[in-house]
Length: 262
Image (tube, rainbow, N blue to C red; front, side, top):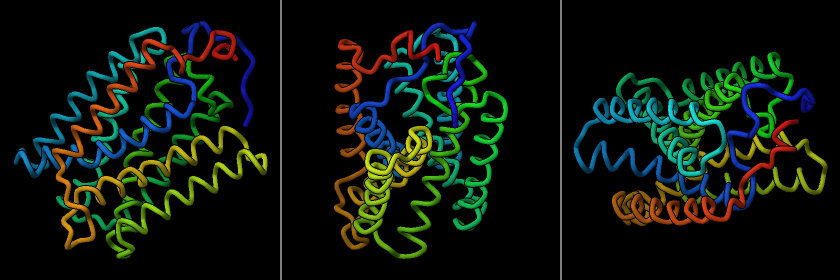
């Protein structure tokens, strides 16, 4: 995977944040909220799966329009969009599993193939999958399509491993954490390509967050801590808001213009 050197014309600045420790912390928080918020609105508040899905997809559509319309990375807009994508990805998989009785093995395989198609089309079109290249609307569209599919894939894969194969939430969490550690080792010790490492870690953080959410909220009889979807959701949202506020002020996650232009 290479990074193109031509200077873009549509955007002068990157539309996404730099990958820092803050990025991964907020990403895991957002993926966990995606799991707990979907359950909270759907079941605890009693909105139902269909109404929750329609409302979430509507909010996501608005967020994506706003995100695509701004000409630079704005942390609060970006992370609100990621949060809504996380909830939407959970609901897509839940609809397939609960409403349409699609086996988790099938949905996991379908989402894996769909993600391969998105990545393949993106790379064939732009010759790069680097986040430092997200400064045109076409690349941004590919980026968000990839993210949406990774969330749906991660939810399906996480549920498949922790529930269908009865691995349990703690062991599932440890498994996905171990995979991410292996990716980090490959990147920093073995020279794994940075773009490959990023997307591999990005995909696996979704089932990691889902497993964490299930562990915190599931009844103790099912192997969880039974902390409640309401409590976990709002605590994680609050922590996310604090971190995003810090990044807004500090600009610690901005990709500078020179790197954004490559």
